[in-house]
Length: 429
Image (cartoon, rainbow, N blue to C red; front, top):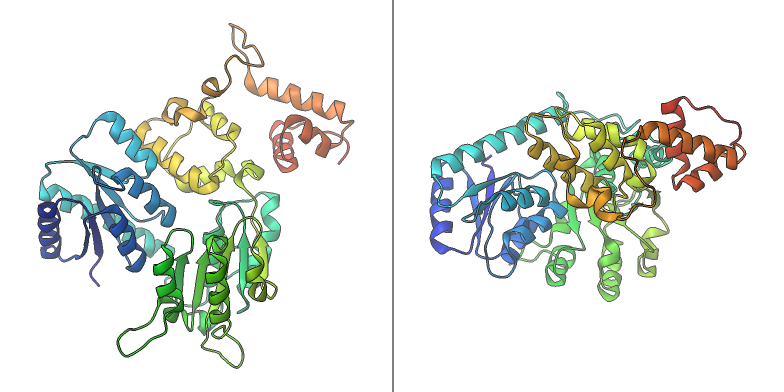
């Protein structure tokens, strides 16, 4: 089956040239003259690679990049620019570009890069698929990277949920892996009713498009919305709290008629993700759902080495760079870590990732000047200072590890990880 390339460029001639060259090379092509139009095409069609221009009216290329990366982390995105400077390239990589090309460009070079990235993507997909199509074991959910104690319960709940056809609600902060865990629940279903997975992000699509994709029934003139494709499989609605109440009420009433039951074996299995309080309008579905709460990355910082090894397997990270990552609050969670890690490795080249390869807001000197603690001219051994502070906190808390963690501004799980790392023993709980 031909791979699909989406071209987003406001220049008519450029779209025509790329469309002709890509079709001649055997690709299916979608073209858009504006960023907003490109995002709509991306939502409606299975896209394998995106070419996007930097300078466009309305949403520029960087804004489109940010939005595309929010929707999918795995699709290759190549940025075209006539203004390729080092700062532009660095910013593009930080935002999420796979590569950038300077205009005017050689079509042979463009086609070679497209072939390269799509081949790498195909290889990755082959590695992820089992050699024989058979039910995948749910126990352990090994594809969800992490070994922190706070993940034990949600992953066990997910493994149990995968064995059923019940509606599942996965809650947690954006970027914490809600959608990834929902995918794994679908993928690990053991029976033949697993079917296809249809994903709709309620926070990024315009209301008119959501109405068409989630409520439209098939007629002689129209095949219906995408919810129809989920019959016999799963419908994943991401960020359900973003929907207006009146639309959500209509949607809940509609979906209740198509959920899989013993009487309706070819109905759809519903997977929901959300953050914060879920509006009451969802109660008819949520009160019957299996609810799984994912912790934020800042509560499982002991997983950073595992995540870095998975996200950047060939990279070497200096102690300084790792210390900055561990000190950061990660408001964007694992999704932010992925973008930051890939950008830093790209900037580091073949060498180890150093602190200077991380974005500026990771550097403590940018945020804490003057410092609360004065660094002596001769420098310090940071690990020695950390161990000393941990021992002081344990002494002040009389061995109570929960209280000591509060004094240090850490989660209890993070403190336990560091006690084990430094071989520090202590009484208490």
